[in-house]
Image (cartoon, rainbow, N blue to C red; front, side):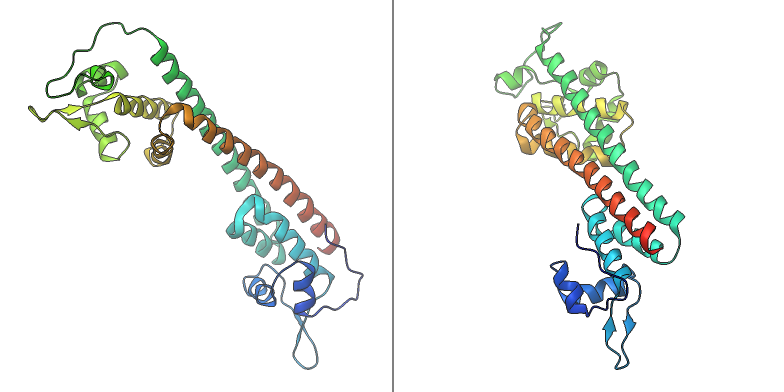
Length: 254
């Protein structure tokens, strides 16, 4: 935490900037955005800042890691305008977003466990090799839209909707033109199904499916999810640190 200033101290923009490793332009920008209260002016018209300005800047910089620039700025604007209830509402929104993100992470982990359980279970009936496909391991697990829809308990129209959203990418049988779902497409369909059952909209699912594809499968994705978990924990702690600094500012200068 930066050193607090004694009452009556006057700072130039460069003084305030140097104390926090910022540029003077950043200080001016923060004032223009309402993150800092309006600067006082010297008899010659130069900006001067006081301890409340320095305290507001400390609070904003502490809020940044947890809330991001846009919401941290909204919080400080509300504080500077005396709208404490609005500032607290903005803080609540960040906590709600964090809770939602944790729920999404849990849903993805549960979906992956379901997929791993399914993959480990012995097949109930053999799936025939489809026409036009090379009889590789993936091809031997390929299926058409009807059987896959039955397996998932959804309508074929639902699978087509997921395809239109880019969530599932079936191939085509070269002879019949029918949709063919190989092992990767079946995996994606099962993951989408689990997340939809958890109440997640298609728009929120698309980035997760992209992560599965980019990771090269489910197992590499576990490392991605571990990193996601660590980032959520770091964000939670950043929210706490920001709240502590904001409370210090509110109790001292408002």
